Length: 441
Image (cartoon, rainbow, N blue to C red; front, side, top):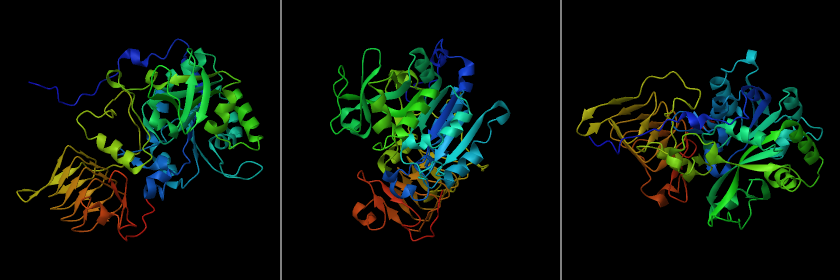
């Protein structure tokens, strides 16, 4: 029997978990992870009207922030701070419900650090470095030897132990995780140059004309926004930067460019620590910061063998999950058949005499009779009315799709009521449908 086209999910070999001779188990207790989760993510348009980008649902049952949090826990780092600012209630509630299993008796914690105007000038967080600086007294109380700074709004699986081991082995003051991207995309990132030892020799934040890697024309080396510092060194630099009046107080714009010519700043290649990197291909990392990118990353998950492996029991993605009944498919008549083809359907869903194709449905979605959903991402608690037809759409939480509504077939007509992206993905929210403001979350 030919199984070449059957789904395959590679397990990691033991060698992939080798973190190097310089990594000791107690180092995890000497490390504080700080996740910056305060950004809005304005390019997601109405999806972030009521929540911060890290709280946006992803993958059928997760939130974006579950990925860096799971990477921390799976890597053995269980002293975690989450820095919040923009419309954080949804994010705070999610962490309280889904991430309360760490044991304080063993000094494990996830500590929420909302903007509180903690400094003398009484400002909100002014930049990524300022967000860390305003919590410097809290961080110092944890007496960490190392501090990892992580973004809260990207999808990836990474063993942070390998990052920290390399930082220690090279006696670095700061280590920046990096990946290779096409040079035409690099202007959205901090672009760096390195020498043969991978010490950073140049760093430019979002350059208009990014430089290629010398031996790889067409590729640029960019920062992932993931940093490791020796803690005492970090505190010194944050205090210095805070006193610099013309600084934007941002790691990419100010801290890294200042440190590169003066200190030991090294780059860590993501392919050395990426988890589930299949067949030595490009490691999986996604910025789902636009409607198009968000739709693509979610719909990719319904493929036969997605690039992102969510079926690895050795590196699970943890989250809060309601206790829900299994998905149900009802009616099997010729003109009314409940079915989902090449799709992912979460718990609590009911496909009632409707057809779902190449789509990802979050929990508690009901698709009523004679309707069709194709190439779409449907967030939780959505009801699709009878005879509705949806194609290439993202539907926000708690939408009630009216009976007979047709979206995704006429972009000009769709733009009169909904947001349509550059690639023709239509975003539907309750407000666009004239329904009660959901304040979704």
